Amino acid sequence: MPTYHRATRVRAPLDEVWEFHSRIDGLEALTPAFLNLRIDAVVGPDGERDPEILEAGARAYASVRPFGIGPRQRWLSVITDRDAGDGAAYFADEMEEGPFPRWRHTHRFFADGEETVVDDSVEYDLPAVPGPLASYLGRVGLEPMFRYRHRKTKECLE
Image (tube, rainbow, N blue to C red):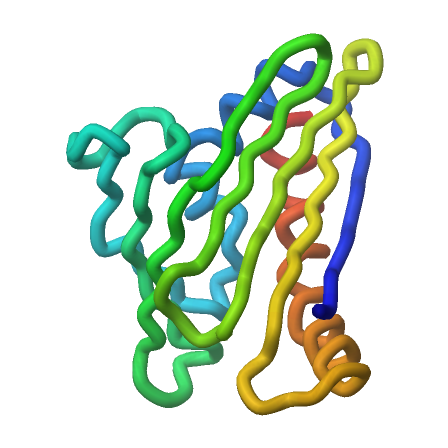
């Protein structure tokens, strides 16, 4: 299974970086405009609409329309894991509905003094694309999005 990975250092404390990434407005701020993201609903693990923090079990119903071309692609993402403590934090989301047969995005955060290392990894499968070609095409598609996300994280928090 192909995996994409990117890490960057942010000049901001872990608690601020963690809080920013734990909210749906953080996702909206970090999504490049070319994806034309629309959040249709967010439901917490207890059924609460629009929870403040995306806890394990929260579901985000969204759609994208890359570059404004073609029909909107629905995307249902579920927070499957979430934990914080001892200078580190992480959460993972998995796509239950959307354009990828498999998508698991793990967001890790590590304190380093007054800075934080933001570490993203995505395990994915592309529809009908075999092995090495999937890895190459995935990297080509994901690199601009994650370069933007990491640059925007620094912009918003430094």
